[in-house]
Image: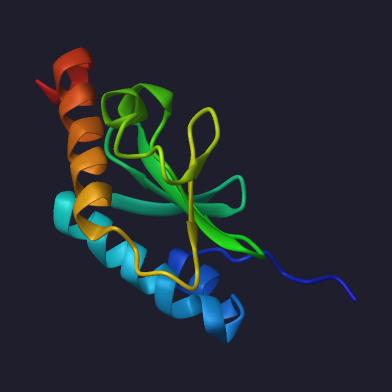
Length: 123
């Protein structure tokens, strides 16, 4: 049986296992507060926020929900991220703990600011 890949972010969330849907909706809401007028789409099989270019992505995995703001957006928050498992451009948040809403917002806002300062399409 071939599973259909989700075409929209809402579809991605609704097809995730029930226990992961709440965290996915919460992550989406946190990010939408930072950038309310943004395009949401599925790229590489995961939800992506974009505005002129990709801002960040997030995804549900077996043991964590991952936030992917890019390495440059994580750098200023290295100390605050020290208690989380991180990759080159991603942060893992366990399903059994509350999402660090304030930290996610700060990183997302930094990423938006970073692109506004560097990308001429924002002018």
